[in-house]
Image (tube, rainbow, N blue to C red):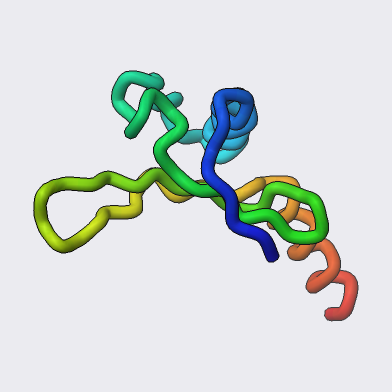
Length: 84
């Protein structure tokens, strides 16, 4: 697995994921760093899950708007159901 910071082009990917899961589209100006203030987890070259990091002057960081790639979840469920 690989972790990287979000890029401008990831916002379109996340928009597709939000739609697929039936979530509202979060506008960029409500997200940290205008949509790039978060992380993407990749596995075997495919985007798996992402979330946004909210910082403050405290000693903690809040990870929110965590969303997963709906295609990967469907593929895993299909493989699980095929074994049953």
